[in-house]
Length: 346
View 1 (spheres, rainbow, N blue to C red):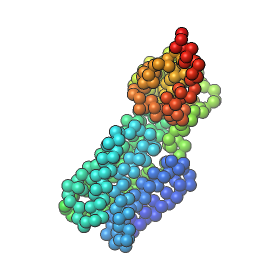
View 2 (view 1 turned 135 degrees about the vertical axis):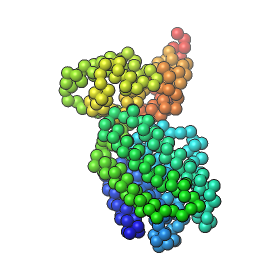
View 3 (view 1 turned 60 degrees about the horizontal axis):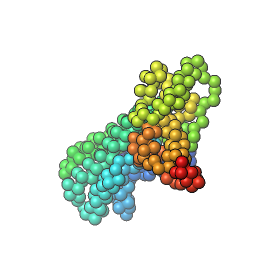
View 4 (view 1 turned 90 degrees about the vertical axis):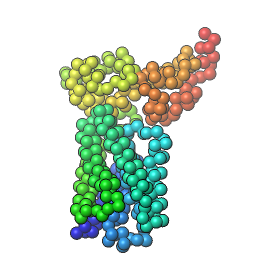
């Protein structure tokens, strides 16, 4: 029964992966397909029957299975575009798992301390992904994507607790009889719950287009028109320049319901994230100031902070996304030397 269920889930993984590869953009489907391959490797590796049948591929199966938590993190980042942790964290966590992979491949028994460190590192990666997805839901303007975030978090948290925490609890002990079948059943359910929305409504759930959005051009009703006018006025008054501005704060200032403002910016103006909406104004201002000869001696960081960015790193990412070049490259390429000389003489 256990082996048959695992084979059914692996078949489900293959079918969903093929559909994703045909229908989805490569930047999204590649990490998703790799994650599904990693789950399939885990199902094979944790089954004595399947593992014995594929003993010749033991090393790659171990590597793929142990990569699952980090592929969850990558997929969450690709789907929901959250801020990355420091580079040393991104290097340290997978490194611990690589050590465990080496032990598993070269030795029959992995020391308990290595397993504990590896599982703890995997949990850290999962928890960071969950935290980032939940945190980003406040910024997301699309209601389908907000619901999908909660679904993603609930599913990933449930499976992670079962697989990783229970593995941690039963180190050095025999797994209970109910664990394998429950494990496989939950993995199958989670794969379906996460994959079906991506297959049926990819336009609503996939990451936003970095190019300027095209909103709904239909005529606004009276309520939306008033909200739109108030929003345009607030942006002209540089409301976007306030660091940490949230859509809830803006809705309160405009005296409009938050859900109405979300809908207006999303469906009528074409933005899927509130930060992207704000950054469009911030980038426009920084571009103008970078090309102003009178401000040629002003540091780029000062201009970025004045426009509302919290620090240099998110500013550089947003600027490169919008212009395909760094702020320094933009200034050097577009600001003419004669303008600079004239400004200095003045």
